Amino acid sequence: MLVDRANYGRLKPVMRAIQQQPDLELLTIAAGSMLLERFQQPVDVVRADGFQVDSEIFMELEGSTPTTMAKSVGFGVIEFSSEFQRLRPDFVLMIGDRYEALSAAVASAFMNIPIVHMQGGEVSGSIDESTRHAITKLSHYHYPATTRAAENLVRMGERRETILGVGCPSSDIARHLDRTLHGEYFNQQGSGVQIDPSQPYFLLVFHPTTTEFGDEHGQMRQVLEALDTIQTPTLFLWPNIDAGSDHISKAVRIFRDHMTHPWLRTVTNLTPEVYLKVLAGASCAVGNSSSFVRDSSFFATPVVLVGNRQNGREIAENVIRVPASQNEIAAAIQTQVEHGPYPPSRLYGNGEVCGHLAERLVEIEPYLQKRIYFEGDNS
Image (cartoon, rainbow, N blue to C red):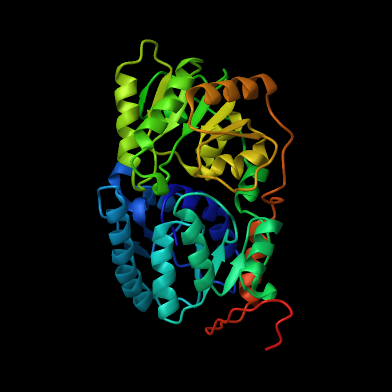
């Protein structure tokens, strides 16, 4: 089940591994922003990669406000229920903490379809924190990304034997990624300065923190002002569809129109491999994307993690946390640029996650009745 561009980036190697298992059949549902033209319809990338898309679910109510997010969840429950009835899957595999995935989890659980959930048990900011744990409690099997997350699941009342393994599928991509990066990957789309990937550049990704709705414009402005003091060529990937994303986009457009010295390039979407190449080659990644916590650790890219969206996430030594303050952001960027690349980390996986998950999917037995369980409880 694919619900946005980052979601597909992490599930792509899992999908490949499932296809290679003769005892498994892959059915793919694309939903959420995967289908939207404003994000260049990432579902087309899925098809170009050779996957059959068995269902498309339009569920996003435009507006990017807390109200439209809540209503989109409701639409999603209705539409996923219809498609699950048509496709009749034995399991539903989902990843992460998106509200679109929560819709699918609710529909699946009430229709007695077992759920396998990846990346549960983590801690973060925003509504993602609550969404992730809600999906965990609806899910029957788990594949967390870290050892600590696995222990969190056990403390949440999940049986240890339902945890199929530990690791993030992004580590598999990083392990085999050809990091050769050509400027045409991003200079032939979007707008702004031309970026030479052989020279130092920054990657900027900044999504809204839904529990801080209304403050996005000011936070984005602080980030842009900090980068303007340095003026290193920077590639900015437009934010996701969460409540507040329009405020971020507006702040970027206004700032871009009044720049005295252009250093910014904006793009709507990148394929999963190109995005990881850009992240791997950046002198510094700035913003609040979960990929700056997770994927950056494999590449040892210096990161300045801004604000509260990823609060509580496990981080490797390549990440510096700062509030959304111009001076502190600028100082942290300078520190990271001077430091340069860090040692790669295996915090989020060893690069052999997806094949193991596919093997475990063959072995598991469906069950429906969940019960909260704490170790030592014999009742």
